[in-house]
Length: 462
Image (cartoon, rainbow, N blue to C red; front, side, top):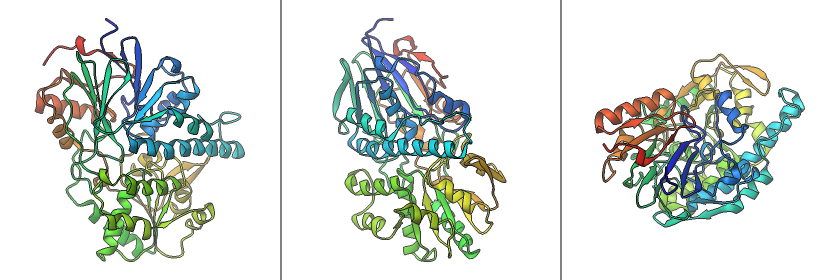
């Protein structure tokens, strides 16, 4: 194959919703689209520690779809391993990376110290994948590009960001050489999201890579606010606390907005609402900065600041583990894989008066998935914790498009692509979307495997 042809290699987000990493090769150069952490099952998490499939120093640039850790969280490690190129992102993604990556490094350092102090790691000493200092250093390589701006991360490969909804800064990425092209959907938001604006139409491309987090389902037609209202009401009636694990970026702000609307309408009692996530607190401030990307009005943005109790210190956080009256706690992380929510789970899960409410996708192998499967105990910090609290799921609050919305986005393409690759989903979800694309659109589609390689000109036209 000529070095002037595009080649695409799948280094992650295959068979899983995490570890988003795609390598594009063109003209003797290497471009990485997304650089995420693998999360969930241990065999996936071990890939974070394995040698990168190509030397980090051989990668010329990175282009980011958005800032969630499963798309961005490996960047500091890539830089530490020798990557010296630029990291290209939208302004919103750039702002969020400055919050998420140092926080990720800090949490990994804390987890390593905790493991060493309590002796439950199999490694001696336990080490972080990267440190807060390394994360801060990697931010120096970030370059900002507005939506719709054309730029060349590597010579001859023009790139454009378009709105993907989902979270602040989230983008679909269009790459073209003129002769061939690839569009990456990134994580697509919902057309009916209560906070974020809908995704923009897709660019024409020979290859389309589309996410499939909710590729096998429709979101519930029962309003998610109604479901959340019911859980909080019955929990408060028991004298309990409602704990909501939430992704610090996007979902935490949407949940807070919904809770404030329920209180204002008198549908839930005037309970205190706590946000216990330093990172989510910082992200909430960015909602004001990037007001053009979401639906919230100025009064609604002020309410997020004025009517939520932000937990500032570790002492305040610990006090929430022993509430003296019913309350609602929103804490990161969304899949209960780390952060302050773990200490709340440890304290609140054994009490049947309390509720644990999940409002987004739970990847296989995460504590969230284990709890939703009905586990009567979960392992945290080297010990088993009994689960007697009510566990509930509200899928309607996800920030991901469901199958009909994913198909609708594909139908905005100006012409059929030569091929659609379905990634970033559990196997059942990815294959369900593949089948739906072939049956409803008549386009060739497939689910790639880890380390698969394809090239646009090797594909037959539809």
